[in-house]
Image (tube, rainbow, N blue to C red; front, top):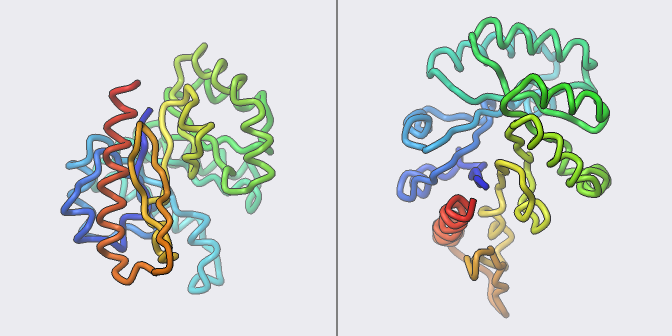
Length: 242
């Protein structure tokens, strides 16, 4: 399994010093300094950032058409190989998402990574696996949705394996997901020390959270640097494990 490090945009020096093998970044948060990561990473995933754009207080009037146009230009300019669709079903409806997907693929000349959501139903998951080499499962940050999806992990795995489709689980690196047969996951968990109470530690093939007693972490940059090193160890371990 591949673990993609997400949330790198605000940690320039730390990321440049450690260079994760697999990186996922949002187009909305992407910074100029990250451009070399597209090539230096063994694999780079670009999220559309459409939800962040939608929820940003700076963008009260939403213009997804223009946002898509700029997203496409960015993908073409930097020859991004792996990029997600604008999975904004609950905002514009799935028919519009399909329209955006077609524009995205036609104007980049590449297949995107469609993001299946539970509202699309099992038939659409099967359809995506039959027509795409790489797809994603979203909505995992919602505990109720996550619980429903994880209950049927075996089914999702079997369908993807049958169709030889790679599946990425967005935003989830819990034990059940990491022990699954999916292809990849991503996480910002390496930034969890921002609460100032614990650090990440790679132990026996897993990340353990070491709680600090009677003291808060004062220098978060040092903590994040340490955490990222530990998560990179997990990246290498799981990749070798297969």
